[in-house]
Length: 437
Image (cartoon, rainbow, N blue to C red; front, side):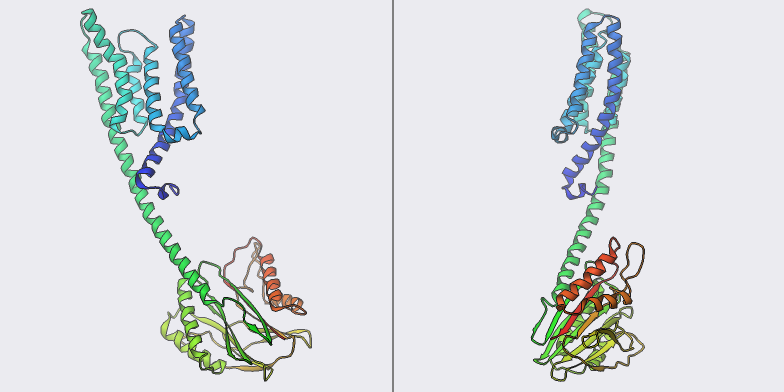
């Protein structure tokens, strides 16, 4: 059905019915093979060589169908091949016995047409040939020999053919209608899924367009960032804002969950950040205004964690504020150690209010700062082991010295991916590395 819903209605119906008729045909071929073999053996044992030759012809006909079973010829022209085979097979089976009277197969063979789903105009072809080979010949022989006609067998065989034709027509129409109901329902679902995929793809493109197109080129800072969504549309966001030649802002945010709703909220946050950075304020004041915006414009189920860092080259210090986000990690080049720079605060958008603070920290040459989202620490491998904050800090300590921001970012991301292995990515992952020249 997954392939049929991609086809036009008429072509899908024809393909489905032909596929079903093809399966039934090759099951019946085994029955015909047994029947023809039995007739052939009987003909040879009674020295009826003409009938034996007819058995050989039937077997060759069956062998030919098996030969083209997997070929495009049968798939493309199955219905005419099916009708031709049934007509020839019925004729050959009827000619096994050349007696004038009706034989048992004359009453049995018409019912085999019911195994297939054929329109009445096509089903009548093998039925008519069988009728002419038996009843029609008997009527003609009776007329030519001036014998007394036997109407009862003729009426019986004609009635059976008529019943099979009417019944087969109803079965074909019912089967056709049932398939169309299923096909139309699945086709509507397919179109709806395709529409949703297209909308998600548009949303993904929109969200990716909100992320920085590249890392900023700043003489006194080396910055490299990346965000990898867990689904079509993620809930992570990072951005850079140049305040002045000596001041640079780096922001990382994470909406609880991921999807279209998260992306819409992040779009609003990004717009607000751009407006707020036109008149730069202290990080805590900026987050306080964003908190009010999130509470007024989004659902109570959507919260946003954020880390907002302002680097100042003249003062050689950074000012940061945190709203429920993982701490900022700093590699101190002078001591060779990792420090956690964190503040306790609720995420943006809670109804409990928020008392956002900010903190200043000095930095030195070759110090490296790591901003990230909790998707890294919560990454699981196939054994359900967590990557964890301790492993992240240790890998950061090992990779920070004597490497560029991009090399550190790629090393950390590669370690996360190696740890995850065949495990599924359940949350968005965002890393931003800032190194002081």
